[in-house]
Structure formats: structure tokens, C-alpha cells
Image: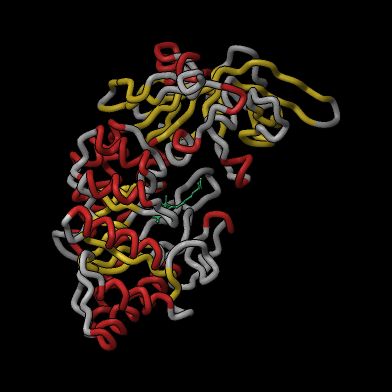
Length: 434
Ligand code: LLP
């Protein structure tokens, strides 16, 4: 069977696009458009790849912490919890969603470079497992709040290893000049470690780093692991502190278009873990529990967005536009990062393309583009247009610009579909208006 970019995307004998074994035209009929489909079997399979490889290579306590900034809604936290792994949350809103879903908070890690006192208090009240502490001011605030609550709060320190993983600048976070974490190079990493060890209400468990996102090469991860384990050895030698946790962050890349490389999560994670093991041995460092924080590589290729084509505009000698009933409000990634996407007509997926089209959204903004110059078979009003690999950073980055309602999220599992997030209604748009 013909697959497109990923093996959960196929073309049926009726010429329709199938996703996770289901006819997308039937799903569009049942749920309306735009709609975000999530292949739950794929999400679970990816979580298990991370979980089982980490456990086998490092030990039973190691696991992935799903970076829920990539995709966040209650049912997804339940899915993550049911696979026995943890989650990375980055705001009190994500924390609230996880709490509402009954997520085991001891497996939740609270990130962010600017947690407010209220965020910290809220997280402690809800029994957050770990804070990943970004800076000295935050360390003080957590110590104070933990003291007030009468607990000793577990933390990791976010360290910037000083690596540029050759990715898009806006999503690269591991360099010395990053707004995140404490740099080894400037000495702040060591200072904040000393400070954390001196705090009465803080239990320092180890260190975290995250070097960036959508990284196809293995070298930057290996280099980051080298630097972090070197730092672990240094802190042991200088401060007598043995870290029991090393969190290597997320960032493994995902194939969006046929020209992107195919990435094996299992192979990548195994290569990183083998390197961690060998490097710990080299430095005589006790092998810590290893966490990773994948977001994109868990959910991206589990997603597809369906739209209905509205107007088709052929500007002779210039450009052809296809307008759809969604756009930057549900997928701002082309507007923000010029991200590549694979676009097809889902109801005529077997027809040959006749020309290049620019897919535009419905916002009153010329930058509202999903993709430029994609080959399509002469789209017409009423056709169903599919954008592939939209599971990560689409729904989670969606907005109500122009008071456009956000699409529903539908989970697909074992040939069945169920609503996980309903379509927004006009009443939702005015819910906060006085
Ligand atoms: N851990 C930390 C601390 C992070 O900052 C991130 C992503 C992750 C884990 C997950 O990284 P992933 O495995 O998903 O690459 N909005 C951008 C992506 C921003 C990523 C921010 N941090 C995009 O749409 O490409």
C-alpha cells in the first residue's frame, strides 16, 4: 500500500486519504472541518519506544517525560499516565489541565524561565514532583514557599551546556546566551548548585539540559551528554554532590516532508543512552536515572489536520491561492518558522497534481499561510485538504485571532474515533468578556 511521509498515512482504493487506517472523508463528515486528528496508537507506540529503550539501556527508574507544550489536553495526560511515564509542564495552565486529568503529580516536572510566586505556590499545593529550576531568584522563591508548606521540595537545576544544535534559531535553547537556565561557562551553573545544596527546604536531585528542537543529528545530543556528565563529575569532585537524576531534555527531529530524513526514536535513544553509560564509566560517575523530554517526536506524526477548500484564486502569471477554513489560528508554524508541511487533497489523493498552489487561511492577514507552492490536483470549493504531521505545536499554539474558533481534537484508536476536545463555540469566545 502507498504510504505518504509516515506509514499511518495511506491512500485507499477509493482514492481517499486514510489516516491510522480510517477514511479521512468519513471523519470530516462526522466531525466537520477544520479538525485535528490524533492517532492514539501512534502516540502510545512512540511513548513505549522511549520508555522501553530508556529502561533497557539505563534502568527501571528511567523514563520519558512527555513535553506537553507540544500538545496539551486532559485525555492526553491520561494516555501519558496510563503508559507509566511522566510529563513536563511549563505553565500553571498546563499544570491545571494535568491535575484535572488526574495525572500523578509526582511524575510531573515544572519548567519555565519565569515562574511567579503564585505559580510556585500553586504547584506545591498540587504536589508537583519536581521543579526544574531556571535561576537563583526562582530557587529562593521555591525554598521560601516549600518552607511555608512545611515540605522539602525536589528540584533539578536547568543547566545550559553551550551548544548550538544547528536548528532554527527561535527553537534553539542550549547556548550560553540563551534565556533559559544557568550556563556552565559563566560559572553560574556551579554557583546555583552550591546555593541549592545550602537551602533548607530544597532537595537537589540532579540536572537538566535541553539544547533545542527538531534536531536530526545525533551529535548535538551526544555532545550535550558529554558536557553534562563532565559537570556531574565536577560537582562531585568540588562539592561532594552525587546527582541521582540527569534529564537530557527533548528535541529529536521529526519527518514533515518526504525530503526529511526518517528518524528512529529507538535507535537515537539507544545511541544517546549507550553514550551516557560509557561516559559515566569513563568519569567514574554513578549512573543516574536518565529522563528525556520528548514532545514533537511523540505526537507530531500522530497528527493530521483536515480543512475544507473555499475559494481558489488563480492570479495569472503570479500565483495560485487555495483558501481553507482554518489557517494560522490552528497552525501558526509556517508564519512563525517557515516550517515545511506535506499538503494533499484528501478526497482526491490519487489524482495527479496540475499546478502549484499557496494554501492560505481565513485570517485578515496576508501572512496567514499554511504552505507555499504545493502540488495539488486543481482544488475546487468543497474539496477536503489534509495537512500532515500536525500533532505537535499546532493545537497547543492555536489562537483565537480574528475570533476564529479553535478546531476539535479527535483521537483515533483501533479503527474507532472519539472526541477529546470539542470544537470551540462562539460562547467560548466571549466567556471572559464582561
Ligand atoms: N524540554 C524543554 C525544556 C523544552 O523547552 C522543550 C521544547 C522540550 C522539552 C520538547 O522539545 P521537542 O521534543 O518537542 O523538540 N514551538 C516550536 C517548538 C518549541 C520547543 C520549545 N521547547 C515549534 O513549533 O517548532
